[in-house]
Amino acid sequence: MFQLKWLWARMKGFRKRYIFALCSTVLLSVLALGNSVITASIMDLVFEPVQATGAVTEEVVSQLIMLVATLIGFTLFRTGFGYFSVMTYEGCSQKLIYQLRRDLYKNMQEQDQAFYSRNRTGDLMTRLTGDMDMIRFMVAWVIRQLIDCAFMFLTASIVFLVTDWLFALSMLAVTPIIFGLTSLFSKRVHPLYIELREKLSRLNTAAQENISGNRVVKAFAREDYEIQRFDEKNREYKEANKKASLMWLKFSPYIDTLSQSLSIAVLLVGGGFLISGRISIGTFTLFNSLTWTLTNPMRMLGMHLNDLQRFFASAGKIIELYYAKSTIASRPDAVKPEGRIKGEICFRDAGLTLHGTRVLQHIDLSIQPGETVAIMGPTGSGKTSLISLIPRFSDVTEGEVTVDGVPVNRYDLHSLRSSIGIATQDVFLFSDTVDGNIAYGNTKLSEEEVKQYAKMADVDFAEKLPEGFDTVIGERGTGLSGGQKQRIALARALAVRPSVLILDDTTSAVDLETEKYIQEQLASLDFPCTKIIVAQRISTTKRADKVVVIENGVITEIGTHAELSQKPGYYREVFLLQNGNSEEELTAETGKGE
Image (cartoon, rainbow, N blue to C red; front, side):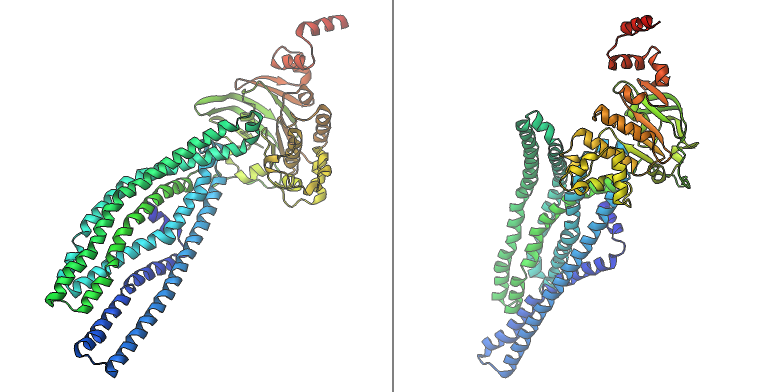
């Protein structure tokens, strides 16, 4: 029942309205007996005297009119009050879901990269959609129906016992068996719904991955394979759904049979009591007309418990996401710098371990404000991991990283990251206009300012698009080349006028002429900026004030282009390879020159 207590805690602000809705359900359950009670009164007070005397007096007619009018008024009141009750439930459930979805999304935005590595995108989408809808269904419908069934059964039992206890006991004799079967069903179906929810998550994940990677699928002509893969997940979900549904079908015939036996008890036992004169025709009519108030709750209880188990499975996933905490967060005493950060960065014996693997170790590096540092190294050497330590996408597991002399883990995250402009290796563009993507980090930019930063990144192609900078580009930049997406990402990073600019292989997809233009623009920025550039081209690194080479998570070389190109090592090998020379050819050319 922890899930229900958790939901109640989230209803702060509209609990009184929900309590009113719950009380209205109790009242409506009691009022459900009213029609039958009034009808029984008509039978005893009107029709039975008429049948006995054979005379229709004015008193009888007036009494009939009064009772019929009461019946009509009572029905109208109950219908109107029931509508108001349902609307209250719906209002509370929608407000709860709105708040929960907002809180969950906010919490997801605050998670670190490890969180998204552990959780599948399809699973997260299932929690925000299907699981949330199950909670709304629980609050608006299932709870109402469970209370209605419980109080209707209880009220009817009391009325029956008060009217004729022996007749009532003969009807209630089978109820313990029904409740026992329902309890057994509830225990067996719970694990099935947990499995069902997991199958749905995998199905959504398969669909999401296929849609996101549609270009790759088409490029390798793997449509048939992906259809087969999706069909497999779809089949697993179907089988899990069928298994859970069949579990109810195993119990349903027994419960329905026992519930319907109450009608037989009314005819046999009630008929015998009526013939013997123990009960009146009105009492028989009352029991006969209220039989459904016992049979219906018992028949529906299993279905509502079915929904209750689905709710428990979904609520567990929602609560897990709600309380998920990022390992990277701002401290209570976090530093919020006044004005711009200078951009002095220092790594002191920094190390990083991810998933049990040591990615970086003993990193000692000092970067001065305004300096341009190029980072080079083989694939998988730890270049991206190194720069991710500065904006705290990851935290060091040993040593420390400081910005302006303050450890990055002491900065307020928002203040730190808003001072850093990043163009990542895997470019992500939103389904928005070119203007909207460039101004993403600073939405207050004017159109002229957006075009100014676009010019710095050589986003000249935007003017040629159908609607210029107001052209909506597709999801993830669909319709643009790799180089065009990289240039928009660079303009987006420059538009925040960062104190620290981090470019992770940002110009790898542009031609040499464009790269040269971008480098010239970066060298003449109109604001102070420390630039850290991860690159594999010598044409990019040779302009840097300092070149850092990382191999196997360790810094092996530090120096200028002129120094490292003459010194044996990884940088010289890349330099010779990109210039089309071998070590022997370069030595021979140097000898001729001498």
